[in-house]
Length: 217
Image (cartoon, rainbow, N blue to C red; front, side):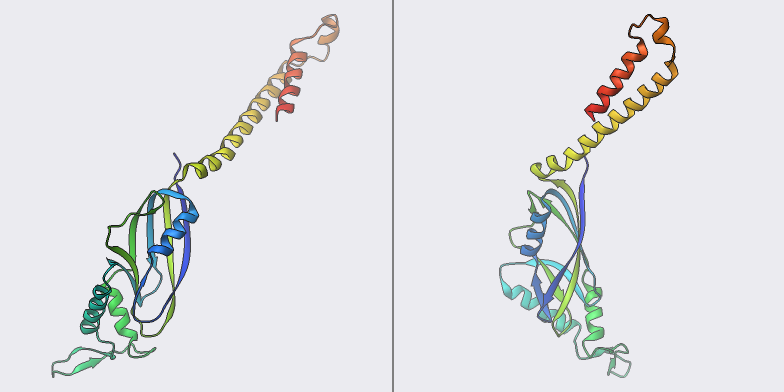
């Protein structure tokens, strides 16, 4: 059995710092590929946003997660304390005070996820949601690489296999034709018709068979 695979990039708009749920978008994309069962590997193609699986019902969970992250990695442009008790300014602040904190938040989380596909949908727990976690303060457009590998739905797999069967049949016909033509050339005697009193020879029969094969193609 040959596994089908597809690699595509999706664009996701985020409103700024916080979570954007991806379940519906990903399931729609999987349905469009007509994958029945397999694996979906996701990669967030940025260094200031990440991926996570967490609570999908109670929004207070996501609020508390964001509050925890804000406390652990403040977005005020300052890092840990120096020996004198003062917080040190980050050197990397080209895009504002939230620039370096966003990179640290990404390092603490994850930029990849591998998820199972079953019956044409993501296999997730009842309360699980897949989220893109934006770590920058402003809205952004993020790119997500989706690499899926698996079995196609029955109707799609039958259609995909048909050209392969036709191709194999054509190759077999051409191969047999080439071998038969070589055999004819080896047996060919231009004076055989006269010596056999006008009767069909083996070569005549082989030539007829070549014509039949040519018509079958």
